[in-house]
Image 1 (cartoon, rainbow, N blue to C red):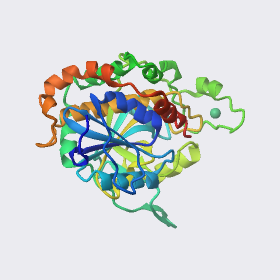
Image 2 (image 1 turned 60 degrees about the horizontal axis):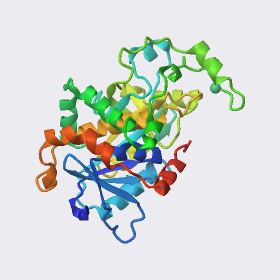
Image 3 (image 1 turned 90 degrees about the vertical axis):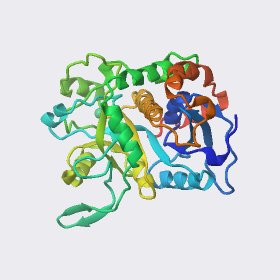
Length: 361
Ligand SMILES: [Zn+2]
């Protein structure tokens, strides 16, 4: 199936190949990719969910706000009718600086953070844009809020008791699918989700991270249903650094002091939100500490992709955007699992290219 460029109204942007690999099997159907506008260097994957024609775009092996802004602006040259941009992938949890703060919010690896207004601020905060004054760092700049129709859809989802069950069904459909790559996205054992007390030092060579983790872990009761990710809504801090040291985490948290509870660090949202509005959805893959591990990246990306799919199943396409075969939302939702299993057949070469960028940090 091929659609014209003007029929695509939703764009999903990914920083890493593994994030694209997590979202792609969520598509109910893939389309032949429309031709790019001259001078647009992006590569695209096209498909649909719930009657939304969706274009998937990804950063070319680089990361950060500038790369994200460039991809988004090239995308808008080719696809002129995009009304919703989603950034879907992984992020680091903003852990507090004392045990009480760490215990207060039960956020675990594989949970999902959705950028939503909180404490009088829009969902995204750019932590590395501001004035370095004698009295401290003063943040400045303006990031666009996510579109109103998306925020109201999310508020509807927050009150839907069945939402988490459906999200875990989207995850299961990928993990139980025929494609072997799906298994790479499985949930790591809960014993590998270790939240350390603040400021446990790490040395770059020969750090006994594993031993430190068993000695200085924050004690947390196991969850009753560990396979069902929790969804957290609130502020996300965006900037160009991979936060991996206790010192930089502490400095940024100080800068963000006036913003209240910031839930997650990520690296691309601010690049999009300076130009146009977008929604950032991040699966928590680490605790932004120096003993950072990458074992949870795939599962966290899959959990974020599952939330994005659920959101797209909730939002009705605009008149004229809907595909004639999929106008009945309830029907398309029932078919999802089957379609997901049936459609995703990435070619070997594409898979190799995607997974080559898997370990970007
Ligand atoms: Zn270490």
